Image (cartoon, rainbow over all chains, first blue to last red):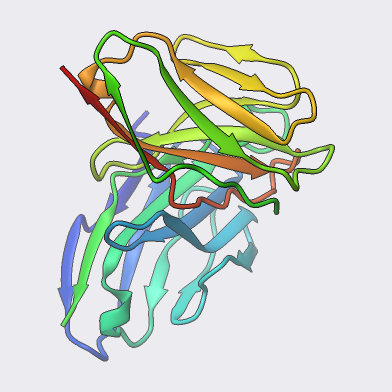
Length: 116
Length: 111
Protein backbone atom coordinates (compact mmCIF):
# COMPACT_ATOMS: atom_id res chain seq x y z
CA UNK A 1 0.00 0.00 0.00
CA UNK A 2 1.23 3.49 -0.84
CA UNK A 3 -0.98 5.03 1.88
CA UNK A 4 -1.94 8.65 1.24
CA UNK A 5 -0.30 10.23 -1.80
CA UNK A 6 -0.29 13.96 -2.44
CA UNK A 7 0.77 15.74 -5.62
CA UNK A 8 2.45 18.03 -6.30
CA UNK A 9 4.89 18.27 -3.40
CA UNK A 10 5.84 21.84 -4.29
CA UNK A 11 4.02 24.49 -6.31
CA UNK A 12 4.46 28.20 -6.95
CA UNK A 13 1.47 30.17 -8.22
CA UNK A 14 0.78 33.75 -9.12
CA UNK A 15 -2.11 35.60 -7.53
CA UNK A 16 -5.34 34.80 -9.33
CA UNK A 17 -4.21 31.49 -10.81
CA UNK A 18 -6.13 28.32 -10.13
CA UNK A 19 -4.86 24.87 -9.38
CA UNK A 20 -5.80 21.53 -7.91
CA UNK A 21 -3.96 19.66 -5.20
CA UNK A 22 -4.41 15.95 -5.66
CA UNK A 23 -4.88 13.42 -2.88
CA UNK A 24 -5.30 9.69 -3.32
CA UNK A 25 -5.44 6.83 -0.83
CA UNK A 26 -5.35 3.10 -1.51
CA UNK A 27 -6.58 1.90 1.90
CA UNK A 28 -10.31 2.03 1.08
CA UNK A 29 -10.82 4.65 3.79
CA UNK A 30 -14.21 6.31 3.94
CA UNK A 31 -13.15 9.54 5.62
CA UNK A 32 -10.78 12.03 3.98
CA UNK A 33 -9.84 15.56 4.90
CA UNK A 34 -7.65 18.51 3.97
CA UNK A 35 -5.70 20.63 6.43
CA UNK A 36 -3.48 23.64 5.98
CA UNK A 37 -0.56 24.54 8.19
CA UNK A 38 0.91 28.03 8.24
CA UNK A 39 4.46 28.61 9.56
CA UNK A 40 4.68 28.02 13.31
CA UNK A 41 1.01 27.14 13.57
CA UNK A 42 -1.06 24.04 14.10
CA UNK A 43 -3.17 22.39 11.42
CA UNK A 44 -6.51 23.88 10.44
CA UNK A 45 -9.25 21.82 8.83
CA UNK A 46 -10.35 23.08 5.40
CA UNK A 47 -12.83 20.50 4.09
CA UNK A 48 -13.62 16.91 4.81
CA UNK A 49 -15.60 14.03 3.34
CA UNK A 50 -17.24 11.08 5.10
CA UNK A 51 -17.70 9.12 1.89
CA UNK A 52 -17.99 9.34 -1.89
CA UNK A 53 -20.40 12.09 -2.87
CA UNK A 54 -20.41 13.72 0.58
CA UNK A 55 -18.32 16.74 1.55
CA UNK A 56 -18.52 19.35 4.30
CA UNK A 57 -16.72 22.48 5.43
CA UNK A 58 -14.12 22.63 8.14
CA UNK A 59 -12.70 25.63 10.00
CA UNK A 60 -11.27 27.57 7.05
CA UNK A 61 -13.16 26.61 3.85
CA UNK A 62 -13.20 29.98 2.05
CA UNK A 63 -11.28 30.02 -1.21
CA UNK A 64 -11.26 26.24 -1.58
CA UNK A 65 -13.52 23.70 -3.27
CA UNK A 66 -13.56 19.93 -2.95
CA UNK A 67 -15.39 17.00 -4.47
CA UNK A 68 -15.39 13.28 -3.75
CA UNK A 69 -16.48 11.30 -6.80
CA UNK A 70 -14.60 8.15 -5.76
CA UNK A 71 -13.54 6.62 -2.45
CA UNK A 72 -9.87 6.92 -3.42
CA UNK A 73 -9.57 10.55 -4.50
CA UNK A 74 -10.21 13.85 -2.75
CA UNK A 75 -8.85 16.81 -4.76
CA UNK A 76 -8.62 20.32 -3.32
CA UNK A 77 -9.18 23.21 -5.75
CA UNK A 78 -7.97 26.75 -5.34
CA UNK A 79 -10.16 28.82 -7.65
CA UNK A 80 -8.25 32.12 -7.52
CA UNK A 81 -5.07 31.85 -5.48
CA UNK A 82 -4.18 34.58 -3.00
CA UNK A 83 -0.93 35.15 -1.05
CA UNK A 84 -2.85 34.30 2.15
CA UNK A 85 -3.15 30.75 0.82
CA UNK A 86 0.61 30.25 0.97
CA UNK A 87 0.86 27.26 3.27
CA UNK A 88 1.60 23.57 3.58
CA UNK A 89 -1.40 21.44 2.75
CA UNK A 90 -1.94 18.00 4.26
CA UNK A 91 -4.43 15.40 3.13
CA UNK A 92 -5.50 12.70 5.58
CA UNK A 93 -7.74 9.65 5.62
CA UNK A 94 -9.19 7.29 8.18
CA UNK A 95 -11.27 4.11 7.99
CA UNK A 96 -15.00 4.26 8.42
CA UNK A 97 -16.99 2.70 11.22
CA UNK A 98 -15.72 -0.70 12.25
CA UNK A 99 -12.31 -0.38 10.64
CA UNK A 100 -9.06 0.39 12.44
CA UNK A 101 -8.67 2.73 15.39
CA UNK A 102 -11.32 5.46 15.38
CA UNK A 103 -9.78 8.89 15.00
CA UNK A 104 -6.47 7.59 13.68
CA UNK A 105 -5.70 9.79 10.71
CA UNK A 106 -3.16 8.75 8.10
CA UNK A 107 -1.47 11.79 6.60
CA UNK A 108 0.22 12.42 3.29
CA UNK A 109 3.64 14.06 3.08
CA UNK A 110 2.24 17.50 2.38
CA UNK A 111 2.11 19.90 -0.54
CA UNK A 112 4.00 23.16 -0.15
CA UNK A 113 2.25 25.99 -1.95
CA UNK A 114 3.60 29.50 -2.46
CA UNK A 115 1.39 32.21 -3.94
CA UNK A 116 3.23 35.28 -5.18
CA UNK B 1 -15.65 20.51 20.15
CA UNK B 2 -13.93 20.95 23.51
CA UNK B 3 -10.86 23.15 23.50
CA UNK B 4 -7.54 22.02 24.88
CA UNK B 5 -4.74 23.98 26.52
CA UNK B 6 -1.12 22.89 26.30
CA UNK B 7 2.17 24.53 27.23
CA UNK B 8 3.87 26.09 24.26
CA UNK B 9 7.17 24.30 24.76
CA UNK B 10 8.98 21.86 27.02
CA UNK B 11 12.47 20.40 27.33
CA UNK B 12 13.47 16.91 28.34
CA UNK B 13 16.82 15.18 28.78
CA UNK B 14 17.44 12.14 26.63
CA UNK B 15 16.61 8.92 28.49
CA UNK B 16 14.30 10.64 30.95
CA UNK B 17 10.53 10.49 30.93
CA UNK B 18 8.77 13.29 29.10
CA UNK B 19 5.44 14.26 30.67
CA UNK B 20 3.27 16.44 28.45
CA UNK B 21 0.19 17.94 30.13
CA UNK B 22 -3.10 18.91 28.54
CA UNK B 23 -6.14 20.64 30.01
CA UNK B 24 -9.57 19.93 28.53
CA UNK B 25 -11.92 21.18 31.24
CA UNK B 26 -14.98 21.37 28.95
CA UNK B 27 -14.75 17.80 27.68
CA UNK B 28 -18.09 16.01 27.49
CA UNK B 29 -18.87 12.45 28.49
CA UNK B 30 -18.57 10.84 25.06
CA UNK B 31 -15.45 12.68 23.91
CA UNK B 32 -12.08 11.00 23.62
CA UNK B 33 -8.63 12.47 24.18
CA UNK B 34 -6.24 11.95 21.28
CA UNK B 35 -2.53 12.64 21.00
CA UNK B 36 -0.66 13.19 17.78
CA UNK B 37 2.84 14.38 17.08
CA UNK B 38 4.46 16.12 14.16
CA UNK B 39 8.15 15.64 13.54
CA UNK B 40 9.75 18.45 11.57
CA UNK B 41 7.37 19.30 8.72
CA UNK B 42 6.05 15.79 8.16
CA UNK B 43 2.39 14.88 8.41
CA UNK B 44 1.21 14.32 12.00
CA UNK B 45 1.40 10.82 13.44
CA UNK B 46 -1.15 9.20 15.73
CA UNK B 47 0.23 8.27 19.17
CA UNK B 48 -2.58 7.16 21.45
CA UNK B 49 -6.12 7.90 22.54
CA UNK B 50 -8.35 7.21 25.53
CA UNK B 51 -11.75 7.85 27.08
CA UNK B 52 -11.39 7.55 30.85
CA UNK B 53 -9.03 4.70 31.61
CA UNK B 54 -5.28 5.03 31.38
CA UNK B 55 -3.87 3.64 28.16
CA UNK B 56 -0.45 2.35 27.12
CA UNK B 57 0.98 1.27 23.81
CA UNK B 58 4.41 0.79 22.30
CA UNK B 59 4.91 4.52 21.92
CA UNK B 60 3.53 6.12 25.05
CA UNK B 61 1.19 6.10 28.03
CA UNK B 62 -1.85 8.29 28.49
CA UNK B 63 -3.00 9.21 31.99
CA UNK B 64 -6.47 10.79 32.24
CA UNK B 65 -7.60 12.31 35.54
CA UNK B 66 -10.69 10.91 37.20
CA UNK B 67 -12.74 14.03 36.39
CA UNK B 68 -11.40 13.85 32.80
CA UNK B 69 -10.56 17.54 32.80
CA UNK B 70 -6.88 16.96 32.12
CA UNK B 71 -4.49 14.34 30.84
CA UNK B 72 -0.78 13.65 30.55
CA UNK B 73 1.08 11.97 27.74
CA UNK B 74 4.15 10.12 28.98
CA UNK B 75 7.08 9.14 26.79
CA UNK B 76 8.90 6.84 29.23
CA UNK B 77 12.43 7.11 27.83
CA UNK B 78 12.66 10.11 25.53
CA UNK B 79 15.12 9.99 22.65
CA UNK B 80 16.33 12.71 20.31
CA UNK B 81 13.92 11.37 17.70
CA UNK B 82 11.02 12.28 19.98
CA UNK B 83 11.71 15.97 19.40
CA UNK B 84 8.47 17.13 17.82
CA UNK B 85 5.28 19.14 18.28
CA UNK B 86 2.72 17.18 20.31
CA UNK B 87 -0.98 17.85 19.85
CA UNK B 88 -3.68 17.02 22.38
CA UNK B 89 -7.11 16.83 20.75
CA UNK B 90 -10.58 16.15 22.06
CA UNK B 91 -12.89 14.38 19.65
CA UNK B 92 -16.30 12.74 19.63
CA UNK B 93 -16.82 9.03 19.37
CA UNK B 94 -18.04 8.76 15.81
CA UNK B 95 -15.71 8.08 12.92
CA UNK B 96 -17.18 11.11 11.18
CA UNK B 97 -16.25 13.46 14.00
CA UNK B 98 -13.60 16.00 13.09
CA UNK B 99 -10.11 16.24 14.51
CA UNK B 100 -9.39 19.88 15.30
CA UNK B 101 -5.71 20.56 16.00
CA UNK B 102 -4.52 23.35 18.28
CA UNK B 103 -1.00 24.75 18.38
CA UNK B 104 0.46 21.91 20.47
CA UNK B 105 3.55 21.62 22.68
CA UNK B 106 6.98 21.77 21.13
CA UNK B 107 9.07 19.13 22.93
CA UNK B 108 12.83 19.48 22.65
CA UNK B 109 14.82 16.44 23.76
CA UNK B 110 18.44 17.30 24.48
CA UNK B 111 21.48 15.01 24.87
